[in-house]
Amino acid sequence: MGNILDKSVDTVSSVYQVYQLEKLTDALLIRIQGSFIISFDNVQTIAATHIQINNVEIPMGRFYKNIVLKQLKSKYA
Image (cartoon, one colour):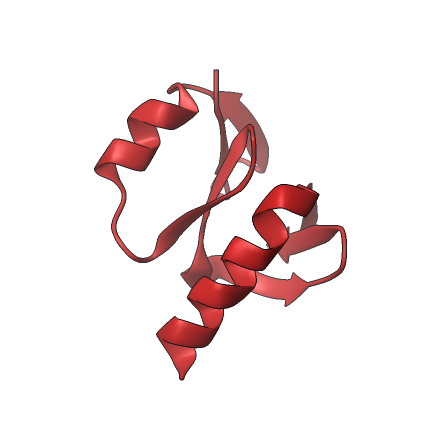
């Protein structure tokens, strides 16, 4: 199951399988690890191994790091 961070209750919930969310996503959502899809709008910090959203560090997989950086550059270029 995939994980969804719900900032209204500060929890991570397993609600959808990640591949199901990827089919529903638009350009604002991106997968950062096998189990995490995030919204760019909520990102506070991007570090070498994690992304911070609402003061919560979410691990970023090495495989996804380059994908995340490319999408950020194209979104904000």
